Image (cartoon, rainbow, N blue to C red; front, top):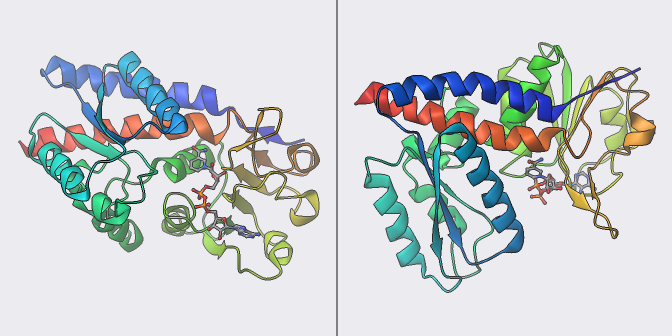
Length: 284
Ligand code: NAD
């Protein structure tokens, strides 16, 4: 019998704890402030942003969107980032991806002040993460770490296989697991004999974007299975990367989709925004 993670309940618990910290800040006249830069009208981005705004509003975090047209130039976008960088009332900035083709996304991310980097995507913070230093970290893998910790999944000396090497999930995930003393294997689209690797894993994090990618024959009994995937079926249902029905009976701890990693991502963004606010207040 496996333990199925309740991501919603865990996110609510963490945000409840965060509420106290926000209360302490507002008592000092400080309202944590997050600015989301949105370019164009990508429908998925609009939904993600709406969720972030709602969550922020419910917690007392000032989340506002700086909306720019799809046709914005690189120069104008960089100028907007700089305006937010120098605005003393802004604690945290994130640029909603994807950006239109005329924009060099890496240059835009690199322009964000690392001290206001809500997503932890700037090269400076990415370097910090891989160096084992403190700093803002990407929300999705941070949410996975919170799940592993709260569900008492041992990490030290354990073999963790991360499938996927994107900048937003796989790579920072590998760094965080390494920092927690796991032995980490990063698999990707060129990896050979993946099932042989995953069968030796105590923890498997799947972030590929293919439904039913992780099957029961790839899993060691008792392993912790973290499904980061968000895929939409033809019927419009949301499903992860794990063949949940087949893998769940084998797993130790397993995250479902939806209601697993997803709710933790928004929660971690809020946690990060408050951490940046606290760092700024301590610095003032
Ligand atoms: P991506 O497309 O940038 O990366 C996918 C990764 O999968 C790549 O590194 C690729 O090498 C690897 N891959 C592809 N085919 C493979 C194969 N056959 N074997 C092994 N590896 C293979 O995707 P991403 O942005 O990292 O997102 C991954 C999934 O996670 C998507 O479904 C995305 O929607 C979801 N996601 C969820 C959250 C959340 O909050 N839960 C956040 C971000 C992304």
